[in-house]
Image (tube, rainbow, N blue to C red):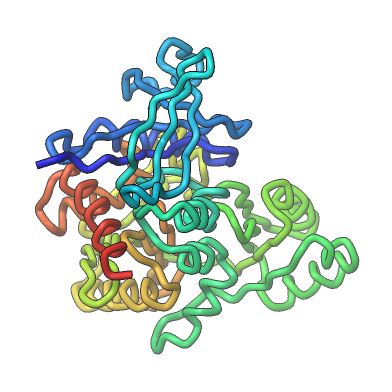
Length: 365
């Protein structure tokens, strides 16, 4: 049987470039080469696309972009009417090129231009199937304010109190916004870019001067900010897979940061966090969390795969935190581990299922 030609995209002009590379190196190392013919395309921080043919470990350790011997400039070309497939052109010098048909895109691009609908829009325009959520599902999941609004009507599910504003609004009335946050949320509170992942740009403010500085710092990562009240509780994650209808929902896992909160350094640079699969919550609460994960996945229009994050407080109240349509696939990331535990499958089989879901969805649209 002919192998399925997979274009694995990674990197990108995003604050999550490093995490994307680490995830992609892990995915490429674990793809089923009996079923899939993978072409790895790295997007540099300045937006250049190159086919990378070197070791997967060089993607994970970020050295791929300096490995000139294994880099070839390339371009994706829209669907070919002759066979209905998009093509990847590899430029070989002297004006020459080689072309490869592409059956499916596997985007392992976290953050902006990856999870926000940009790559999904490109794939739609070019007529090629792609793994993960569609444009609308990506937009609604990536924007924390939109996802919270869409899930506000889920019966029994709590959401931390929050305010949201754009930079022009803060520039116009900073004092009013600070006052509103203090009155509605109280200290401590969390300041976050509304459109970012991997805990990038998140700050914990404990008093007024710290809040103003946190907002200023968060605007470095985007022009829309969400400030949330502090919720004390266990940090819970659930992996979900499927294109609607019957979904596969993992058991909940628990993250213990062993730090002030689960920030970027705790996630990826410091070896302090602990993980428990299944989470240390009672069976009734666990089933409620799984049910909410399915409802949230549906409410935001997610597809293919996603990770849904919660807090569970001392009274077993369940708070929706956020959902991630391209969750991390590094060696410490929980999406694959949760699915592996729940379904009793391997990492390789998780990757296979994600690609198969992309092709399955295209056939039904």
